[in-house]
Length: 118
Image 1: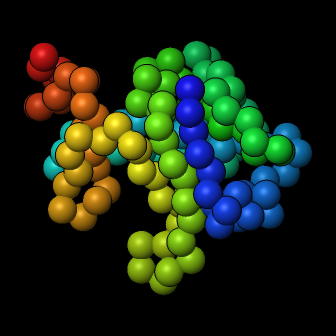
Image 2: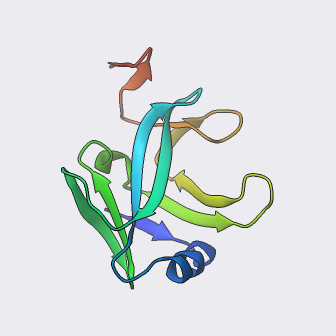
């Protein structure tokens, strides 16, 4: 699995993460294009989660449902006042919505009305 953490995101995460903490990244249904990335910093793993990427002291954890959407993920960081924070893009993205907050990936079923359609 290929996950890339860009320099600004790496610097921010290294300054925020304590030794026992990790970045949880999950993919959820939502947005105009069908899927959105969500993330939080935490120290407690949930059932079904595992570490999928390690870069120095940064560990990325996800659940079994989200892992298939993380290959090709690029994590960046912006300190802009509007829309600042971690930014997630994926080289496998097929389409995004107008605001860039949701996506669909090529080769995956499209989600409409909370159901997968092949």
